[in-house]
Structure formats: structure tokens, C-alpha cells
Length: 112
Length: 115
Image 1 (cartoon, rainbow over the protein chains, first blue to last red):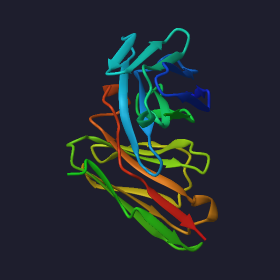
Image 2 (image 1 turned 30 degrees about the horizontal axis):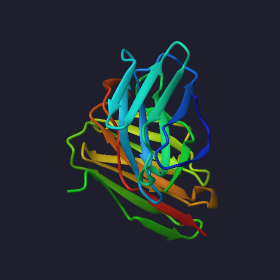
Image 3 (image 1 turned 180 degrees about the vertical axis):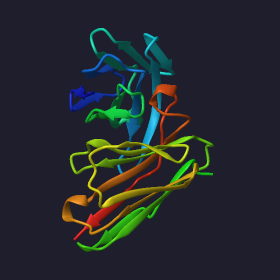
Image 4 (image 1 turned 30 degrees about the vertical axis):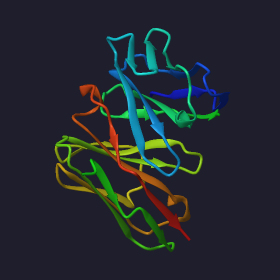
């Protein structure tokens, strides 16, 4: 059964820093891995989707990598801004490919 | 022009009552989901429907009954509400199931409080 773990649970950085959020998953037979952002009191916004055949995806200052063999993904945020403050969730598809299984998230705080 | 919309946004009710949460998506997606986010912010899959057909039912008490009248709607009815049902319930949709490699689109959630 797929399980997803995110480290650290919380992270505080000054504006301008580059940072890495980590995600690990137990079942490497995934179809894809997705990163989301959740702002307080809001729903989730999709940031990046990496298909199982891909190694990384980029969108603006965000870069996500996928290493299926080790069951790991990282989300790299370049030149962080206060507006990046949110909870970032990683989700891996279950083995049947019918749903996403979520980690508990990393809450990021970027101070100006 | 909200893509995935849920109503109501807040729901406060007493133990033992029956309530429903509605969800609609205007993205033309085939698959819809209900997720539950508990007080520790952990998001867990409850149900998934693909083309109005139930494809996931994850160890959810049978007091919870999803209903999909058409591809664009997935409602959640909860009978005999319990204190432990208090959570935020999120509806989501995607072009197909997870294997289709399409991103999930989430609604803004319904915060259910059972007193």
C-alpha cells in the first residue's frame, strides 16, 4: 500500500533563499507524482506533475525531480519570496492508478 | 467560472443529523473524488468515481454515501453524523484516474463541524 512521507514538516527561511522540500514514497510502481500548494482555508493548487517516465519538471522558479528507484522526489524553490509561504503537499499515485496518496505536507514560511 | 465548486463552505450540525455536501466541476473531467482532511491536515482519499462509476471506496463507514448523478457532479451524503466526522472535505476532479497522468483540480473545501 502506497505511503508518502514529507520532510521537514515545517521550514522557515529568509526571502531570497533557495530551498528543497523532500518527499518519499514506499511503492515505486507509480504512474505519476504531483506537487500541490495549499494556502490556509483554501483548496489545493496543482504545481507540477511528473510522469513515471520523467526525471523532472520545471515551472518558473519551481523544479521537481523524481527518482523512482529510490522512492524519492524533491521540490526545489529558487529565490524564495514571502508569497511562497504555504503548505506544500506531495502525492503519489496508488498502484492501481486510481487515486493520489498524499503526504502530510511541509509548511513553508518565507520572511521578508 | 470556478472549476470545481463545493457547497456549502461551512456546515455546523449536531450529532445524529444527516447532511449533504454538493460538488460540481465544469472542466469536462471524467473522474471525481472526495478527500477528507483531518485536524492534523492529513488528506485521505474517500471515494473516486469515473464516468459515474464508483472505482474507489476506501474503508469509509457506510454512513457516507457518494452519489454521482452525472459526470459533472459528485455529492456526499452523511447519515447519523458523529463527532469524529468533523473535518474539511475536499472534492476534486481529473481528466481520468491517476493513471491518466492528469493533474487534480480541487474545490475550496467544506468545513464540517459536528457538535
